[in-house]
Length: 240
Image (cartoon, rainbow, N blue to C red):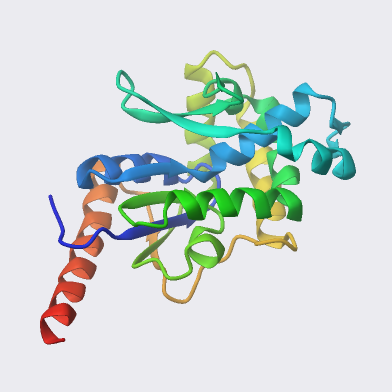
């Protein structure tokens, strides 16, 4: 599938609602670059955990700000997995950033203004030429407010918790469904009510509830909206 204009596609939504899965599939179908913005925040959270900058789930804000220049985040395309994997200071940490320990503190890290400013700037540089699919919490509202396509993905909390629980179990990470759901709801609360760039559904976003959809059904719906926007832009160009 090809389009004349390289679009910017912003995908926002709650934790474990399938944003990254959708974004990866769309990027692969469109031959676009996929960026998991959440992985970047997880990378900062992992760095903070490793360096004792979070104690009892409380971030040491001043020390974290001092360490930010030492945090380098890059993405490496793994041809075997066909996904972009996160490098933290040149170390592949794709698996480690997905652990419950990181998940338990990443929302607190994401509330810090200094962290958001740093990562938003990096995300905007990555996507300044379009041809990108980026997912997160504030992509359509803050990172790319002028994105041609904005999707807001959601699903029933129990469905999201079960998906996350199965994912962790498959990775050999021992937890319970109840703990998994509690973590998700806590993250929803923090993400939606933080002062810095809260999770919001923008007025121009297309809502996609995938509670009862397969991954393929979700992908086809999303691609339909991309095709519609591409045709609209092409028609406007012809009229000029």
